[in-house]
Length: 626
Image: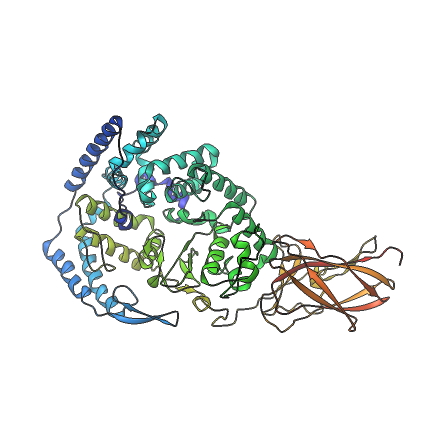
């Protein structure tokens, strides 16, 4: 189901509940309240208590025998012995809970089967839509806490109006709590940002634009976002408008408008810490320098630039690099260890509207990203061995899988809401302990994933976590060239233009790739990063007359102090300095060469150690006075 279809049907949604991780977060100490704030807190507290009592009364009866069979199996699950797993080929980890332990998996199947029997017993409760608004409002109030809501509302008339607007909009509350609520329980800040975005553009009121605006407002609820001296709402408006223009210009990934599910994935389309300057720069880099990376399979789309242009290298000294460069730009100069590579990979996804998160594990930095088939970890170990967005990796993965199925996920969340109203303990050990309704919610998640045959897509490039060598060679694709893309031309001014496609061989290799430009009309050629063995670009040029010509190349580079070499007519060697273009297209400084009338051979190669280089054309301009 597409997300805008889901949003349209919100009024008919079954009652929902916030998942465990939202309520598990530690609450800050109570805020100091004014007399007016104390009155508001009392009002919100009465509202919360009334809702809680109503929800408790809705608890369905469960057959005691079925309940005992379900809970009785949990002891065996808790007593499963641990196994030793090797992570990234070097680190041994003891695993007791979760799918990495085969014995745990087998026992959990028995627990899930018993849970399914209980689900049948409470079908009418799970399907009942009557308590939807009541349960949604309870979930929000209990997560926000009356104290924090009052602390925000007491700031002024505008702030109180935001809280009033929220608490009086049942449809919005359901949507918010379906997407797991506001980070840190900061609903006042979330409403401030959401309202600011909706004031900035009418399009944010409908369809996936509205879902996106709400999701990012729920995700980033601190006082500032990325820019330290700018309020969060102002920053989020800037990001939203920047991405909206990129969407209109066809820059964002086609999947951006079709993330689907409940809309939860839209929480992660904005970067966690990168500036708009970084975003704009990496968009330009990939579109100019490596447009082919916008077309590869989704697991590597965009973020593969880490493999091609940010080599794994330890001991890089960045102190001598130009101070005006951003950290991201510096990472491209010489590479780095796992952290810089993960940062570049994340940013490359964020820039094109692909949800991504950091995925750290013990002693290693990696990333996780969205794909149409599900989330995958990139440049690191599986979710079982890392954390994502403040959650154990397996919890994040399971949550991401459930959010792809809005209707059955409502039943999960309804169990969660009831459990919170009853004050139950949270689930532990990936479903081996916790309160009864909390556990039912967890096993409803597992049942949802199993019933929808949602697969774990696994890892992407784990072998590249701390290496530059892939487990298997990358598939090298070839492109079709038109006659025009292969033809050398001579202008009325005598300037000879050599397109990359005019080379004697346009067969792509692992080091030399011909690719369509971002708009698909022209062809450019790319020298891949790495390797000491030269690879030649060969051309034959027919000069109309003997004489001197100025040779230039239109290039795109991300590194400094590099050059490539021309062998002219097999005898003359010419060194050509490469400018540092920062991802822009620019011409090399002219080099004067002598051509003979008729056929001339050109052989270009990049001097080792090679760094990446893209070429759009070569030009030969006659020197006046020949």
